[in-house]
Length: 145
Image (tube, helix red, strand yellow):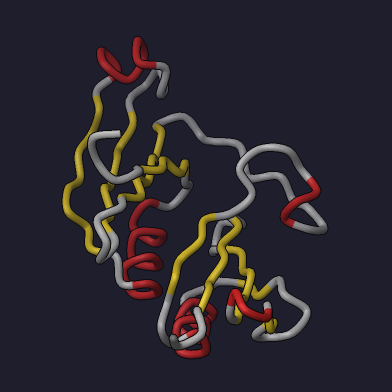
């Protein structure tokens, strides 16, 4: 690899989800562009063009929010994040689990964990959530070393 990992997430409401990730976990929107049909079609992104917002974490990873011109299918509802094949969730490592979780819930996230937080032993404390559009998220607060 030559750069930090980037993940693409197809969304219905680009502005709302960009705000959610900026305010919730501290991402910064570094770029926004419309990919025209002449590029998005041959690339396999969407026949009618796609608007993309590049969000960067403080560590340099990027979350690319994709908003296609044609309506995208909603994510599959599941009883548990690991009950459906495919990408299950994104993990964000945070230093204030309760505060981050509270901000995300205030911005429209839903807590999926039975308790908040869950003690994961030596791995720290975790909370699983769904963002406002139903995409799985994990917040991890590692123990102080």
